[in-house]
Image (cartoon, rainbow, N blue to C red; front, side):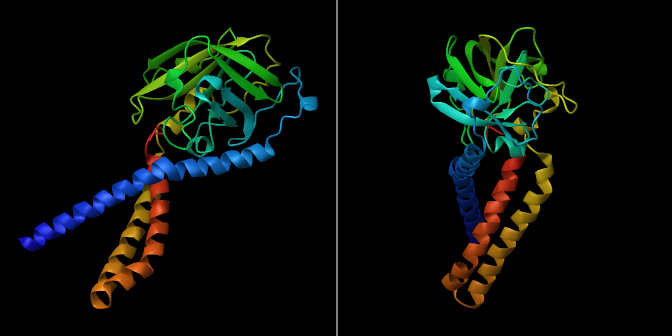
Amino acid sequence: MRRVIGWLGQSMITLGILILLFVAYQLWGTNLAESRSQDSLKQHFKIIPGDVDPSKALPPSPDGEAIAVIKLPKINVEKIVVEGVGVPDLKKGPGHYPGTPLPGQPGNAAIAGHRTTYGAPFNQLDKMAVGDPVIISTKQGTFQYDVTELKVIKPSQVEVLDNTQDNRLTLTTCNPRYSATQRLVLTAALKGPAAAPQPAPSKRIAIQHDEGLSGDPTARTPALLWGSAAGLVWLAAYLVGRRWRKWPAYFIGAPFFFVLLFVFFENFARLLPANY
């Protein structure tokens, strides 16, 4: 009985440590990854004043490529916006919904962003108020939108991404924090004339692109494999420690264990909604 209780106690302690490590990865590890991506995007995405032309239509960009700079002065946010709202895209920063107009163009331009991980660009989106400015710069110019509405909707209410007769910007993120049960939606109206529209999209439409806020089921198998590998390394270190020396065995196995654990966390995080 003592052995059973001791084993259960050790198992609970180990599980608790793993949970704390995963929380640390979510809070700091993902932010570091997003920061590196943003630095790289800033180096390659340059808006040269002489090349800005609002009358020139911009062709659709590949997923993951930088398309704009968004500024939310009220909540001190300035981020590079990438094309696409898939899991890999939103790891880099806010993502533009393919199939919607680009910011500054006629219609409803829509952008999604993380709430609590990967830089959490829209973490404080709920603090925005009617009249607050949203500034977006693209290779067609710099455009100001003024907030007109902030609301909470169901994830199924994808009509907020539909095109409109008026020129607006729609920002979406998960709500409440640490949950994906709702969506927080900010709507803002373009102040001033719109730029030239882009060519009609020939690929996926926006309402098919909410996977970045809902989790990626394809990460299930990699997460299982990497988690099993980390568990096997820990088990091997434990068995070697019992036959040889405990702490030297743990010291040798630790680097391999933490590398595998980090990769496991990356894949496990892909299974979770973006706000995690």
